[in-house]
Amino acid sequence: MSESSIELLHEAISKRIPVVISLPVGSAFRHFKTRFVSEANGTFLVESFEAEPALLEKVTAEGAHVGVAFRDAGNKVIFTSSLAPRNGSQPLDALAIAFPREVHVIQRRTSYRVSVAEDSQVEVRVWKIPDHAILRDRPSAAFEIGAKLTDLSVGGMGLSLETTGEPLLHVDQRLRVLLHYGEDEALLDARVRHAHDMPDKTQKVGAQFKKLENDLEGRQTQSKLSAIVAHLQRQEILRARLREEVSTLRMQRPIVAA
Image (cartoon, rainbow, N blue to C red; front, side, top):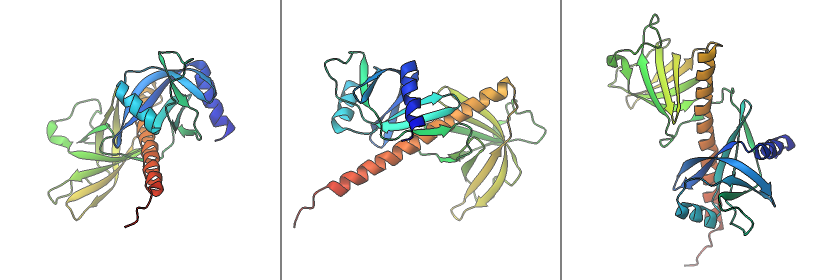
C-alpha cells in the first residue's frame, strides 16, 4: 500500500467524512451509508448504521471481507477489510474496522470499462432516436429497446439485446440512454460504434457517449455517471476479494482419507 494511499485514509478519518460500508450477504453485498469517527490500535471507527445485529455478528465472527468506499476530491477510494470485535473502550454507537492491507484509488474520469453483474442494481433504458431529436424530449414507447447492460465506463457502454433474428441496431444509430442507480440518474446521448449479431439471436452492441457540455447540467450528469461507474467498480473489487477468500478456504480444507 503506497504512503499516499494510506494518507488519504488517515485524512478521511480525521475529517470524519461520509463513507459506504458493504457487507456480504451470500454472493451479493448490502451497502450502508455512515461516516468515519476516529482511529486507534490498528482499527478505525465508523458511526453505527442500520444493519441487522445478526448480520453484523455473522460477518464479525466469520472475519468476512467488508467493502469500504469514500470519495476524495475527484477520486474514489476503495478497500476491503473486516469488522473488529467490540472492546470495552469502544463507543456503543460506533463499529470498529481493521486497517486494510491495500487501498485502491479509482480516478473518477477514467474510461476503464467495468462489467455489470445481475445484482448490480444499475438499471438502463434505451431508445432509438433520430439525429434531430431533442434528448430531453420523451420519445414514443415504440422506440424503446429492451436492453441488458453488460459493461459501463464514463465514455460508453456495452449492451446485449434480444432479437428475432433481425438486427435491432446499426452502427452510428443515435441512442437516448437513461441510467439509474439509487439516487443517481444520468440521461445520456450515445452512438452505436459496433454491433454484432450472435448465433443465439442476440445482438452485442458497443455505444459511445457524447461528450458532455461543461455547464452545470453537464457537470451534474458527469458526476452521476461517475458515481454509477464507481459503484460497479466497487462491486467488481469486492467480488474478486470474495472469490479469492472462497478459493483460499477451499485450498485450506483438509483432505479426508478414503
